[in-house]
Image (cartoon, rainbow, N blue to C red; front, side, top):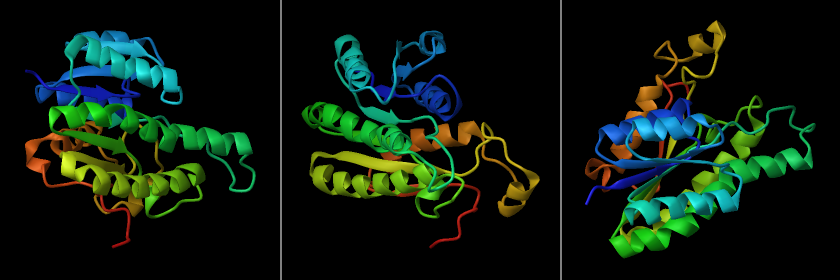
Length: 232
């Protein structure tokens, strides 16, 4: 039976790159995003699409149900999101902090709750979360992302410990500055490789983490940032 990959926020950028790479690797893809473009993209990749938001528990449940109703299994889940609000650290409102948590952390908590029993019944699976290099090198440019992605890293370690015996792996991809995000020459000068990352490089990393070649990798935070982070 053909394996199935579910990807959120997949209409463009890194989410679409992950969808394309996994489809190329032989997965049937089930995609969700807020824009109508997701339907045509899913069709072009031979899968199914759904309009919805990662911050809506009902939409996330509908996405999982769509995959199960049509294909009866979920082998890979890629949790991708948009960017949480940005602003000065003390000027961000309570509502913005709550929005950031819903977008970056709670979407993973909810989808993991939904797919874990499915993956247990199948004998395993892979969950991949698209995070950021700022998870371990916090940036005042991205305060909400820095705080909540660090929390995501902790959750990922806990999940990997709890469900490793069920052959369910969870890992995070930590992109640096990817070509879909505009950067200044000053930023480029800080990147040892001297360029922004390519979208397909994130997609190929996701496909690797989903593959048998990564079967012994779990609970990890894989930086794909051109060397911009300096922490060990």
